[in-house]
Image 1 (spheres, helix red, strand yellow):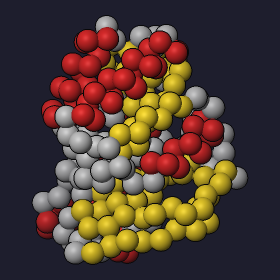
Image 2 (cartoon, rainbow, N blue to C red):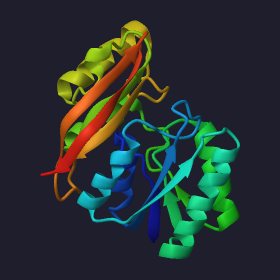
Image 3 (tube, rainbow, N blue to C red):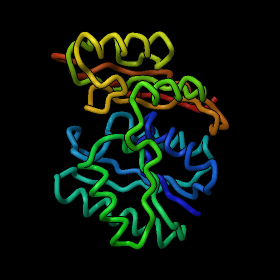
Length: 224
């Protein structure tokens, strides 16, 4: 099938794309750029740099801007997916939804309204399994957002490697966090992966952090 993927640039959307691409054709990346950093639906840190990921993947991207107002952003998502259906003749949508019924049911409804298949390859995957798949598949990603105790600013920009995964699993036990960030505890950005033709190098960034909440602002990056 020809599929479009709701693509945030984070680890979940990349891994979902890789799994879907095993037996389908990914024809476009669909990215919502929300001006609301606390959007109910959409990942926001480093979203503007997904354009480099699109270039490295060799997959065209459609970016749709939204103000992130709770009900209106769903209308914006509908328009984005409808545009992709018309432009790329996609037959379905891939999402990186893991456990959020709020997200999955709303995306499913949009797909139903547009006559598209909705594919959620990560759905109900244990978070430990997801993290291990990232390591096994050589997906290199960094943490670009934190929003929970006990994360301090040292986590911003940290590579999600085996050491990081071990630390996240320890925090699961002591602080009862979702280790893969399903509760919004962490956000991520993929800098290199098997489907990339070139790696993303971040040459300048800045941390914004206060009271267990922060984001990494990528200021300069390039493909190498």
